[in-house]
Length: 344
Image (cartoon, rainbow, N blue to C red; front, side, top):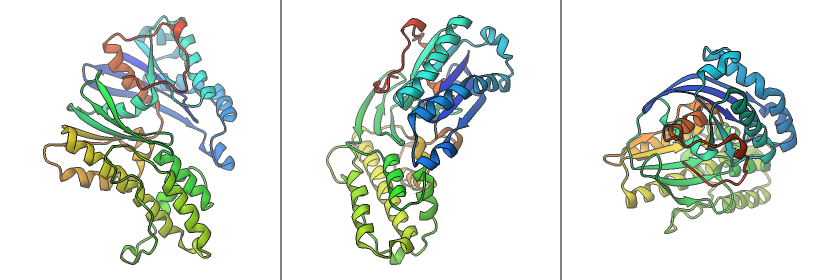
């Protein structure tokens, strides 16, 4: 079964073709057209600009994805079994471009459509070229979401913790903006944090919000506020950016790891997974892996770096497992939903 995936939830126009055989996924193409350089000057994504770029790029990206997969675009209807498309969450104006494109192609090619939740796409990036044992605990960390999900099977899941305010990725972006470092904030904060080597003599200290709370929820707005006040009080903060970046990043990492381990102590899973755009953070990946290694009888999984940020391969993979259950959506009923609930 070959699935065409389409992803346009934010500022990446992406298309992918995968081939699924039972639990095995083979990636035939993974094409991404990024808009980062366009939005940098604004300090964040401008929805109207993103939507216009999606309109310009969507068909060329899909065609390139098909050709990379060895499929002539004019013959796609003969080889593609279904189209998986991100229906939400995301920017409404961006989502509409992908959804309407999928709807049109589904009608013309006469192939079924699979609506795919963006967060579930990030989770299913872990299923690309890998076997996952259930039950699994998944920490999904991105620009708009920080969620802990307990997954019993491909169909059965439960959200056990989520952010009450800012997501981790959003906190990185705002911290970077406060220090005039640029956009996107995550990679920039990480870059500066890596420059700080004098760990033993570190003087800057930030709180770890909700790290000792009895639940599994997150909150990063207080951390952001702590940084804001620290910068206001420190007249020489520009000379200490690596230390500020290091402590800010470490505060987030500490909370993410401790909350996940705490959840595992209650639910006792076989696999712990890291997912989402922030899972590209190398320090988070390293510390997370080392922490999970200490837990007996638990496997740790995280996506290949190229599948951590927004891409269509993860959407196609999530769609494939829904296609196996024949969970298709009639093209007439297909619509974008920027606030859609997680649906495996």
